[in-house]
Image (cartoon, rainbow, N blue to C red):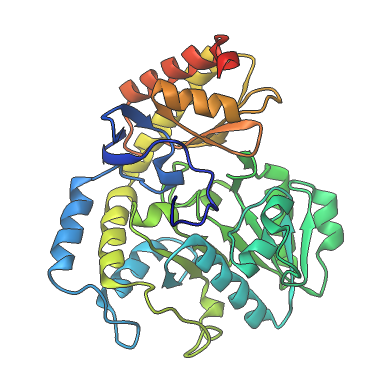
Length: 382
């Protein structure tokens, strides 16, 4: 019997080795990993530059805490806010922690408590982040939640206008809802958020935990909209597989997070920061981001050609394949058996999250596997 709590519905095999987009289980079976650890392994598995960064830093310093100045954090923060309207960074360990920090910062800065969030959103499983999440399956069973989160339909302009008032501290949203179905913010909705932000003191929190760090073809997904968030949360791809999260904030928020208002023991430790800096140095350049856009266009065209009756949604290398209302869970299991790792985005969409370094040949192979599973009757035998 396992000594682990059974809070994960684990798949019945263990991945023990990986290189680039390929991973292998305990039997030596090869898979194409189009989950990337749920958008985490942005530069692929065992990327040589990341391996070298960890090796070098591990021989110097692993942890010293935030009692002391951190040149590594200073450099990483400057790299993240360069050429953006954002000015400052705080580092933690995960996306949920990043969103907790964002919620605290927004409440403290405005002196208000009401935060508008959206149906089908996902912001994490700690109490504040869970309360902000617009999915009952995440929130049920845990008793009273953090109060004053107002959940609205996503992309509903009129509902947003009606709810945003003088008591509202912030609007919190994902530019693309990952767990909720790979639903992108509409241009009209983004404009409405921008207009509210410009005409009121309501802050905008962009949860870029999954969409950030090049995943959608730009540094952050909000750059493809008119929205200029006051706070951006990030994690997942930032560490390329090593745990690190954080938030970025605008100039006017600087004095709100003063000494003693928020903190973390492990956040921004030298190992995590050295890896994240390596990731940023690779991804935050025009040539790399352009390659993500090109591979995205190639992938989307291949999917639309192969599956003209399905929907293809998302941006960059965060794509969803909607199966016309069918439950995708059996297909995800069948794809595992066929050698392609995918993840569901809600019950009706297959989420495709390859490493940003994926090749066109690997995309071709993935599409062939998808066709072999989705265009046959073999699913009925599972």
